[in-house]
Image (tube, rainbow, N blue to C red):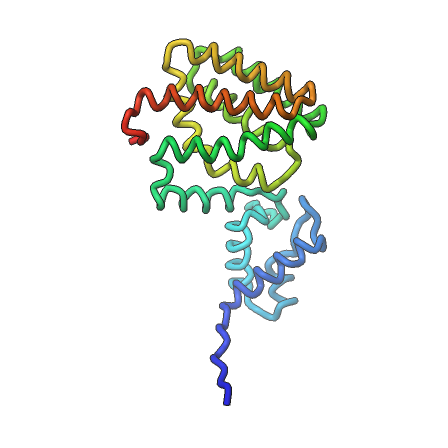
Length: 239
């Protein structure tokens, strides 16, 4: 005779959080709208306000709501930050962030196709954003911090221009590692000029809808970037 094990009993705050999360996903509460008050939800669920307050904490950690003191809880614009943070921690735990070769191999796989798809799908808003990032890179060529941020936003902008949400999510966790290699490459003589030229070329190819050209351009840029970083780390590790 088959026997069954007891089902796990979730704490009430988790149950309440899951119910509210499902309502948000189903569109019962629109982005930007205010959720019912803690007391209203407590009455509806038949629980205490403390249970609802704990449920709100779960929803905030999941990036679904923001809590404004004295005002209440509001549905937040979806963000892949929680997923990116979790994956970023996993990457660090594995130690994969220490390998330059692994990082650039992943970048070639992701960013090569990002560039190809961006050339096929980018709209005017995407092109304007990429142009603005390039202008910031040109304007801040003398500032490693501002240059790096503009450079990162350009690459993330290319991912966004694919109009495939998964590709942006996959690139986001690499941001901390990308920031490090961009900063290291920045100090190599001539790197800024080559970087600017590579980004100008890539944007021009995306604008021209040249998918194959954009793909090859980003691969060439990444090979050049990798060679500069590896020159500083002959062992192949970033640490």
